[in-house]
Length: 507
Image (cartoon, rainbow, N blue to C red; front, side, top):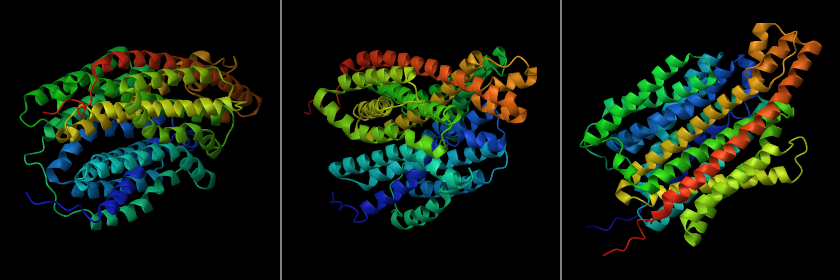
């Protein structure tokens, strides 16, 4: 077999694909601090706001696996370039959207582009770096860009809002794509190995329809907007479709998603960690961004700066997790990180953000670090349980866990928050019924109603909203802490038999 020489342009390829990846990750979190401004500008209801934020990670969760297998069939380069063009078009449309519905539609396009970009980036790194040491370094750099991108999202959003209108948070993607697309076109190899066989579009559609039905049903059920039978029907339909998808996967000679991977307890533990840790991170950021702006009256940029400790600590969690799990074992590191994260959440629930002192930023940093260690631990558990030949399937499964976690985290936090908020708010008795119903939904709605009322009545309503939101966030963070402690126990027992594939004796 001839010796393959490493690609001399491999580090340039890595730079190009990391730049392609950056806007996709930024878009996960950039909206968190923009929500209050956006809500007022588009006069969006609480449900519309949740959809604007959520449609992106939810659709991505359904699309990642199908797009990953499609890029294996037709080549990473073609799918990546197509994804970049679609993402740029979606960004331009989102920037100039005139209504909440138009913005939701543009976010659908962004999710389609993003789901084409993400699996290709990992696939190209895997193909470009033959040497294991170099590949580990490349994946480490990629992971840091991912964590840092998600981390600076709120900061970039805040800084742009300081100087421009809300659409600028989307428009910024267009110049990036105009540089990245030609670079990828020139640098990426024209000829690449592809997997033979047809792309099972039917299986892809089943997965997407099932995922979205289940998640939409859960959202609608919690928000109380739909009747219970209607919600049950949508969820049941989604579960039935996913069941059909699973059956097809198990019977197909060329399944889209390798479900035998789920026979490893470590992969199950890894997926649960990925979903809960990314969900908690996204939900806490969204709650904080609203608390800081609506209750404490900070600007979007100030809110972004306040959240730097979470972001900065999350960016270093990856390497720390790798070092600690090699030293003390994955089981101990993963379980302990989750317990400490729960402690930080419980502390934040009782804290006064008006007077943060040194302890609140410290607790935020601990939370960011420990949840990030949890996420990296999930990656180590999943990737360490499979052979290199099945790394692609395991990778798309893990990425789906992250997207689903982010989407569900925002959904549960958003829905739980509006439920607790409407119970906590004490409305002025003189408020007419339709306005009272709107004002008690979310703090964003409270501000919209207050601006219609004006004067003393409006001011009194805002004060009631602020008091209710502070109470709500305490309940929310305490509940999250409890869930994460329960997760730590599950992880501790599930990882009892965990051994990396490289630890098994070779004959």
